[in-house]
Amino acid sequence: MKKRLGTIGLSVVLSLFVAACVSPGAKAPKTASGKGISMYVLINRGITRSMTNNQVKNRNQVGKWMERDLPALLKKAGYKPRLITRRSQYKSSGNAYLLVVKITSYNPGAKAARMFVGYGAGATSMKTHYELYGKGRRRILADDLGVGSGRDWRNVIRKIDTLTVRAVSQKLNQRTR
Image (cartoon, rainbow, N blue to C red; front, top):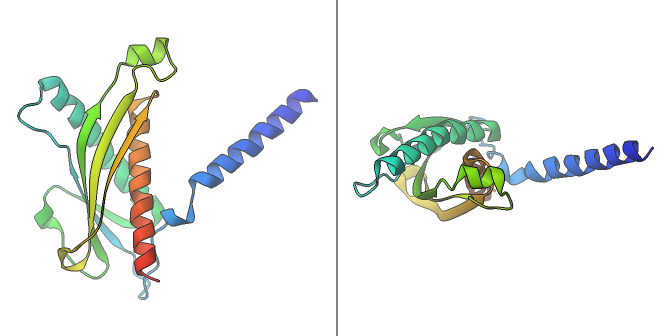
């Protein structure tokens, strides 16, 4: 009986957690024409000449994963994402926006410390700066985000991508009211 109550309690807690993660602000706004919103996505890995080979390798790994994850989250939110490699590929129109995300800082942490010590030891952290541009290439939103985790590096990227999509959706939902 105690085991069953524990299972039910855990199920309720998990359900509440999942419901809290899926907020209404994370959905793309509806347009008057019924057409979807195109979201051009440009990810700048923030690689500089002063970086070591290992730092460049880490930024490329993180950037590559982010280039798959962010468009997937945008699509799930109801946008029509299109990954671009140059700003000039953005076609400005009424239902198209440009989201530029730059990785400003990345610390891969120490996997061994995360595995053996735990409690946040060897944490991975990342900071980004994002900007959202609308018609006429006018900036309508900009912010800096930073996330750290004692778990896998992908969790950090997922959290930043989720926060970015949520902020973009909230801003665009405000504009369409």
